[in-house]
Length: 129
Image 1: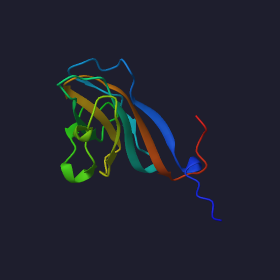
Image 2: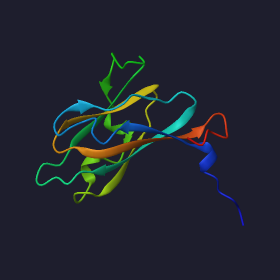
Image 3: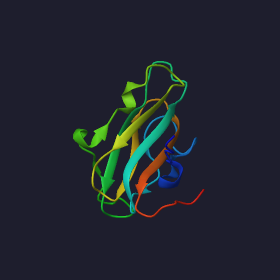
């Protein structure tokens, strides 16, 4: 039987902590993709009633994202809007080529948490943190 090891080829980061973006608008943490070939955001939506979160991805070349622009649709796999019910989980992939990426919540009830999964590490194994 083959062994498929994703553990040593990924690292995790918090893209948005539980309380870092309240209901409404705000930026998540900046994710540095240096040393990795892929980025996936895993998220859980809060218990919204009728206002689902409106979330976009932004990217840029500056470490503080002072040059942030919205990621083009063809550089995003999936959607934050495709979550069927409150408290559901989802995933959104980034396939752009900028080094720095973040989520931006434009409106709606807060996402609970967003975890950035950086994959296909150039140097393996990655740290166990």
